[in-house]
Image (cartoon, rainbow, N blue to C red; front, side, top):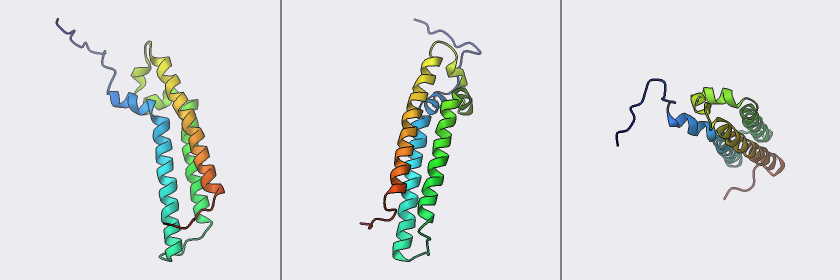
Length: 134
């Protein structure tokens, strides 16, 4: 059993790009959750302890801005999936028989992540921004 030598032009590129492409939605969602809750906790801690004078309106505004940016990134991924693939150097993985499947999986995960981003942003905006820290 001799393995076939790889010919020039057969290499699709690093698999990392394909994984980043498929997981673009969940990665944006995870980044959004981290940034929203880290920012909220830090600003609330500064405000409660009196370390810095934090305007109470700054917390919901920062959450709204982060939510809009994350939602815009996910809408872009849903709207232009091939551009996102080229951005993360996974465009060659879309060629061939699995291309449509990869686009569908990425769009499904991005759509679910968009719902999660909107849900997390809405709850962070609707609930008390600074509950008592424990």
